[in-house]
Image (cartoon, rainbow over all chains, first blue to last red; front, side, top):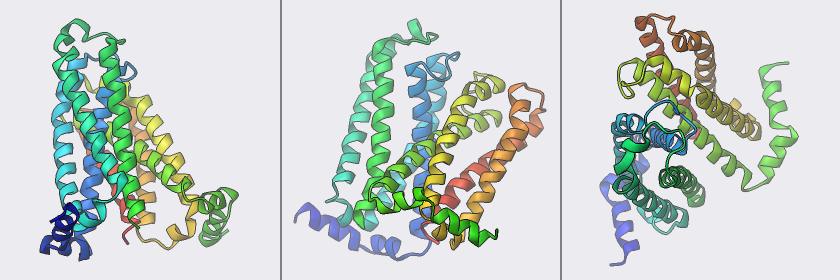
Length: 164
Length: 155
């Protein structure tokens, strides 16, 4: 069984079919995907802008990061869950899409970026917590984060255009 | 000029024609609309949740509101500018759309609410009770704009 056949099977399952053919379920899932986007990427953007040194400049980096983290994670959970249901309903259409694949590549890279940031320069945050101009590694993490998340949004939106 | 004539005029400007004639301009503008929306709603969420006692609690309410004011306005300007371009390219579609007027009323309410309350929040002259009410209203109104906007594609 090829991956495309598996996707076809997912899409044709009763859950996939009922989402696709519903009047309200699909739009409601789309709506949670938009709310999740604002809460997750919106808060991530603020943390990244703080790292770059252009927003919330008077606030300590760790205050911004730690207090917004639960919002980022819950928003992302909403994104992930609604994303699974959207995929469920159109798996075979989404799987071959290059923009859909690109979206996941950039989500993976953005995850690596966050992981590296937390494991390296963020460990010494106490030394630069109040600096407007943060160490270059932190600024780089901010720039990569905001750029790659923008690309995730870009490829996500582009996927819908390519499906038609 | 009637509403219909106004929408017809919007639908036929040279900008409308340029966007309609191109395959790529509409999606690109829409992506920037999404960038603006994400940042704007992110900021609205962070500021209003702070007023309600969540999120950036180690910072004061006026400090959070003041620090994010320029970014919020910038994000709103980006979202509204790109929104106008999208609207011009399909004004007649919007005219016939049931969700579109809701989106516009929510948007108007959001802008009015902002100008009525922002000074009271950043200068801390508003009582916390009123501020919390404003925060709830602001959240409802701006998420209303986004959800009614998303609904345009479905109704």
